[in-house]
Image (cartoon, rainbow, N blue to C red; front, top):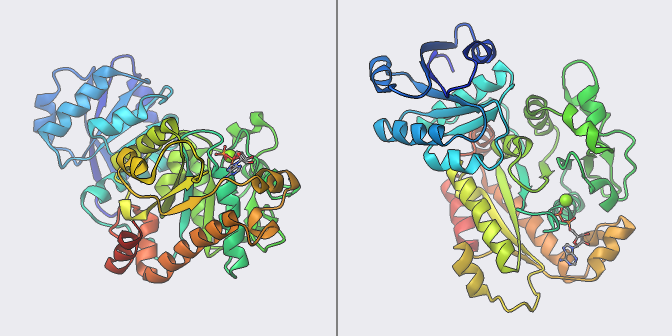
Length: 407
Ligand SMILES: Nc1ncnc2c1ncn2[C@@H]1O[C@H](COP(=O)(O)OP(=O)(O)O)[C@@H](O)[C@H]1O
Ligand SMILES: [Mg+2]
């Protein structure tokens, strides 16, 4: 973006102003037009400076910050608000979006990353998609509220089903501590995302290729670290670069995630063009799935680009299709049956779409792949590019109708 961003910075008490300023972007593109200390008596400053954007900094969960955001939104609903927190955002992310903020980042993020978030918040508010100029492949982020929901099962089978249908597909295991994509696909972790993150030099496709493991189906996989303590090497900054480069190297990029909205997962959602939300057929899981969908809504994720997949959907647990619709507020796009062949195939390291082609589960995974193939065919290349830069960009009418028909 060519325009200089004029930001007003509001610091919650206890936040070190010098520290924050050392992390903010500098130069042509960013200017701090005022600093509010303590979040009190700030309304005059807000009115006098009329910034493009409000940057609120706190150190973890803070009711004062939530109240401040809420009031700032009421005062100027069109002005974007980005929150930086120096402490853990756990339990805070949802509240921050609910209060009306556009984004939340955990410090220390690099100033590039902060710049990116600020530009994106402004672009979203202006309804503009920041076109990157390259047609990027769809990136499907597979999300689910809890462990054991079937995220890994679905992401690995979707990836393999796309490959089997003749498309170049690439899977990233973003469950950085306990990733098990390698096991479920029977791959040896010769190289993992840990090795890639530790390697020196810039990320280009030629270099990246050397870190991708190849599955028999033709799919390429970037595996999770082999030990939990290696996860911290993988930064959000690195991931943003990584996802963009991977999207230039394949027809589809699929991302398997750990449970919850961790900073890495948020970065993946932000960069993605589609979300595949996985739920299971019990009241607790459905409630969490609904919370997940609401969080995406608060993040202004385009609802046309969210698919709902219900796993273990034939369980006789006393929940009907109508119950699901009543709890979640929408009909699932794909149902995956419970099948005892699934744990068998996981243990063998052979995905069920290949191991038991004729099973109901395999058919479901092919239907899921087909849904994304159709969605991609119907997106103009330009629209795919725009989606890369702003997931909130509106889907073309035809694709919208297609998803509406499914729903
Ligand atoms: N539809 C299903 N039928 C039978 N077993 C399933 C089904 N879905 C998942 N499982 C089993 O549950 C376990 C957890 O699934 P997984 O995909 O690893 O969940 P997540 O990645 O969400 O933690 C898998 O090992 C698999 O064997
Ligand atoms: Mg998993």
